Length: 339
Ligand code: DAH
Image 1 (cartoon, protein in one colour):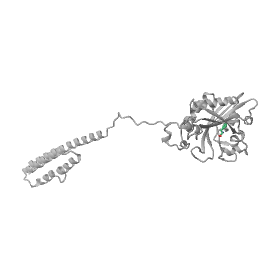
Image 2 (cartoon, helix red, strand yellow):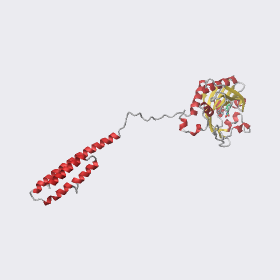
Image 3 (cartoon, protein in one colour):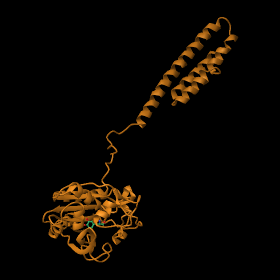
Image 4 (cartoon, protein in one colour):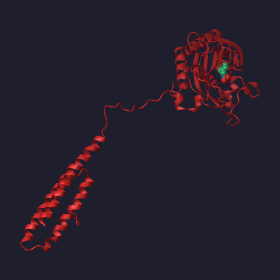
């Protein structure tokens, strides 16, 4: 029995030494010290020994049991520490790596161009005013010299919200509201959203943007209008830009003009963007009609003025060479991030 105990002990010692996982060591504990373990089996055989042999053998078995118990506990600890160390190493964070940066957003191209235009007109002494998007027929048409039966209403397919109430088709309504609340000299711009029941295509949208301008003072002439708008065009499109004034018609101005600039894509040679003409129309303008001044209580014999309406979407697409107006409204981040 003693020899058997010695054999078991020697085998266990070397097995414990070689164990290299926590599972190994647990298996060894069960194998030698468990209920059906090899040492336990020897203890159970003690009954067959004589009264003298029993305490001697008992002590040997208990010593071996104690020894293996200690060694297994020790080895368990060593393996546990090693596993923890390995886990720590595998989870190491490299704090020298650059952090993921939070990208700041950027302005929409329409906002960029609108802000630039506001800066340009501010530098020429204009104030920025605001007007409501839901307007009355009175401000959007009547006071602008467009009575109910005027054919010019056909040019602006209107969203009516009721008999008298509509979504403004032009920022021009802000001219009237300004003249009702301010006394000349007046120099204002009004950027904002306008609405027309147009089909969506590459150059049309039912929601688009304009910037209205209005100057009223004593002795304002067409020269002032030309000077201000030429200065604006050169600042927004570049100093080499040429500006052309074409006679036109608007009910609220007399005389009226439409203003073209040399195409920023081809420099005036003619290309796909300007449809071969070399010119791009950017705004309508004119000398404020005496009827309009009168309807706002301003005496046309004393004061004169000019007004203009600039298409902001058109200015943005031509300035940034954007081929389709719909890109401005789709809000695709991949597009908007380029500005
Ligand atoms: N309101 C006009 C439009 O939407 C643009 C316009 C033309 C505005 C001439 C003006 C102007 O102030 O004088 O077509």
